[in-house]
Amino acid sequence: MFGRAAAPIMPLPQPVSAQAAPAAAASPPLTLKAIVGGPPWQAVLAGMPGEAETMVAIGSDVRGLRVLSITRDAVVLRDGDSTVTLTMRPIPR
Image (cartoon, rainbow, N blue to C red):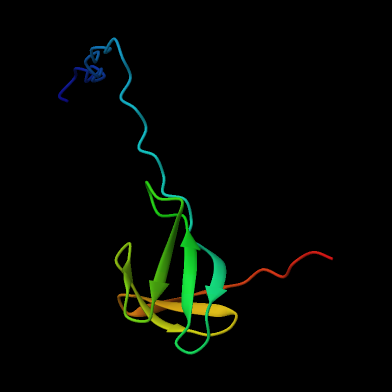
């Protein structure tokens, strides 16, 4: 200002750590593997961290999601104010 040019501000160099912090592993998506029984239905879900598969029933809590309903081909989960529907994939012929 007033006749002198402002010097550009240079960022200070940051120290480099010897080891990079491990990246946070993203959770795999929940998938519907099977529907078991008949009324009352149960479902087998995959994608829970540390578990291969988990059997759930209506009212179960999975990763903060609540199981609202299970039909012969779908599971409806509540996530706060929204719902998530997991459906069975058709078997290739």
